[in-house]
Length: 631
Image (cartoon, rainbow, N blue to C red; front, side, top):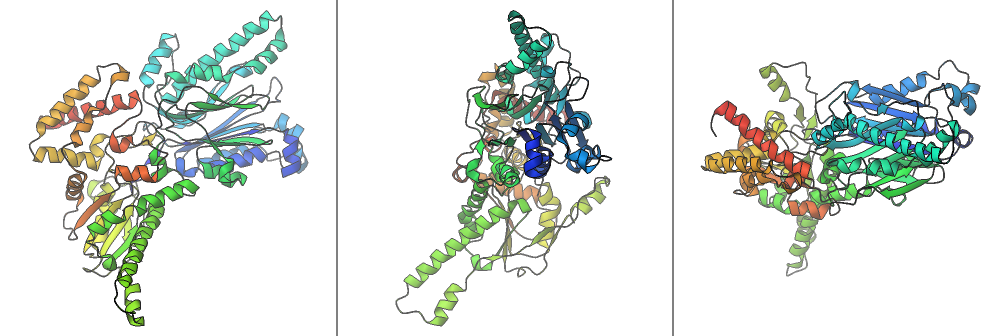
C-alpha cells in the first residue's frame, strides 16, 4: 500500500558481430538499440524518476563523436530518451538508414555497446544532473568513462576525504559523482601505465594509442576502486575505447544477471527481463556472483573475474518480497510460499472460522502471496474434510458428502486503488480527507457483522495508508473482524543499501516499541541505548555493532502488533483489527538463498550500515530532546 522506492535498474548490451550482421539477420543495425529499449521498459518498476542511456561507436574517426548519452527526468523518461535518439534519424532515406557504413559515420547511437539506467532517488536529490549515466570526458578514448549503477554507498564521506587528499576537488557531493571521479582517476592511472609500457617498447603516436586500448585492464581499475566502498551496488560502465563492465558488491546485496552467446553479451538487474527480451530459458541466464565483475574487452572477449573476495551472503530479501518482478520463476514460488505458510497464524486470528471469512489482497504486488495464502487454506480444508469423512462410522450419504465438501475458501476483490493523491493539495484537512478516498471497496462483498475479512499486503512500513485510508474504507463493509496480514516480517530498521525506507520515527513498529517503553516506565532503556549508540560511533568502523536492537528486546511481536493497531486505528472505527506478520524463520524458509534481512533483524552486513543505524537512533533521541525536553 505504501510504495517503497528502489535505487534503480541497469541494462547493458555488447554486440559481438559487425553491425552488418544484425542488419542482414534482423533487418536493422538498430538491433542493440531496440533491445536496450525493451530491457529498460521491462524494468520500469525499478525506477520512474528518470532514465538515461549511453552508446559507444567503436569505428568513429577522429573529429566525430563516438560516445553518446541521453537522459531525461520523469515517469515517461524512457520514452523521451529513445524518442529523442530516433529523432536524429528523421530526414534520411530508407536506403541511408539501412546502410550501416552511412549510419556509423553520420548517426548518433549507432554503435556496438549500449547501457541503460532507470532511477529512483533514495537521497531526495533531483534534477537532470543526478540522472545516470554519468560521463567523464577526455581526448583519449580510453580515458572516457560512462558510469551508471544500482547502488547506495554508506561511506561516501570517507571516499570524499580520500579523493580530496589526492588533490581532487569534486564539484558535486553525491555517491554517483564521487564514484565516477574515483574510478576515473584509477582509469587515468591504468592508461598512463600502458602509455609507459608502450614507450618502453619504442612505440610512437597512434601505435601508442592502439597499444593502450588493447592492453587496458578494467580489472585493475575495479580492484583499486571498489575495495574502498561500503554498500550495496551493481556498478556498470563503458569506456570510450570499448571496454564494458559490471561489478557486484562483495555482500551480494544488489542483484544482476547476464547471458552471452556468439552474438551478444547482455546484463540486467532482473532475470525475467533477459528471458523475455531475448527469448531465453531460466537456465540460460547466470547470476553475477558477489564481488565479481563481468568484463568485456574491446575485442569482444569476456571474462568473469573476482574483484573483491565475497564478504558475506547477504542477498536482499526485499528484492524477493517486493521489488523484483513476480514473473521470475523462483520469486513467484517464494512469494507464494510466503503467503502459504501464514495459514496457521491467520487461522488462529479468525478463531478457525474459515467458512465465515473472506480473503483478499492489497496492493497488486501482494497478489502472488495472496494465491499462496489461499493454497494454504485450501490444503488445510481438504485435510479437515478428509479427516471428517474418515471418522464416519458409516457410509456417508450424498447429502452428508455435499455438506462436508461445501466448505470452501472464499476470496473477493474487496479493495481497489481508486484515485491518486495529488501533491498540489497541501492543506492538512483537505489532504487527509482526500487520502481517505484513495481506495474504494466492493460493497456487499461480505456479510456485514458476520464475516471476517483477511487482507494480505507484502509489507507494512509506516502504516500511514492504513490509518488514513484502508481501515476507514474497510470499516464501511462492517466485517466482524479485520485481520491485516503482512507477507514480510515487521520492518524495524532503515535500509542503507538502495531502498528508500524512512527514518526510524516513521516505522510504525519502531514507534510502537517506543510507546510501549514509555507506558511501562522503561525510559532508561531509551537513554541507555542512546548512550550505547554514541559510544559505538567512536569505535573503528569494523568494530561497530548495532546497539539500537535493544529497543525491541522487552517485547514480543504480538505485543508490538497490538500497539501498532492501537496507534493506527482511525477515530470512530468500529471493527476489531488484528495484525499478522511473517516470522523471520518463515522468511528464511521461503527465501533460503536470500539471507539479507537487516530491515527486519538489524543484522547489517557492512560496517557502514551498522554505523548509520546507530547514528539514526542518536539523531532520533536528540530530536526528541529538542522538541520534548524529556523522554
